[in-house]
Amino acid sequence: MTTRTIETTTANDIALDVNGNVSIVTGLAAVIGNCKTAMQAQRGEMQYAVNTGMPTLATAWDNYNPIQFEAAARTILKAVPGVIEVESFSTSRTGSTLRYTAGIRTIYGRGAVNG
Image (cartoon, rainbow, N blue to C red; front, side, top):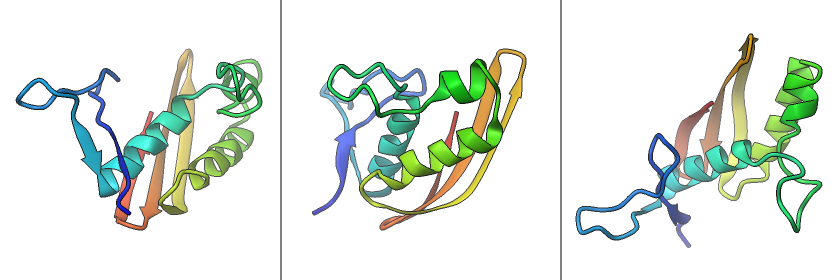
């Protein structure tokens, strides 16, 4: 079965197709989209899964620890259906700006997640 998910815009809004319907993406785009969503889900914010999500507060803001942030990100990304491997990961923080790039190998090919 092919991975499918709702497409989002760069502003993280639900994307619409040319007919005004919710746009669905499949394959590599879907897995990378799911990886992006997984990285944005913050630990403690999901009502029924409060112990899941990225521990960004603890690893990036309260006490910047890029090694712990990367370890958590790799764990989160590897749990996304369709991900085979996190091939590379880099992160940096300047003031109140956190940036990361993850190179992902999926069952559909390779892609990247940036934040």
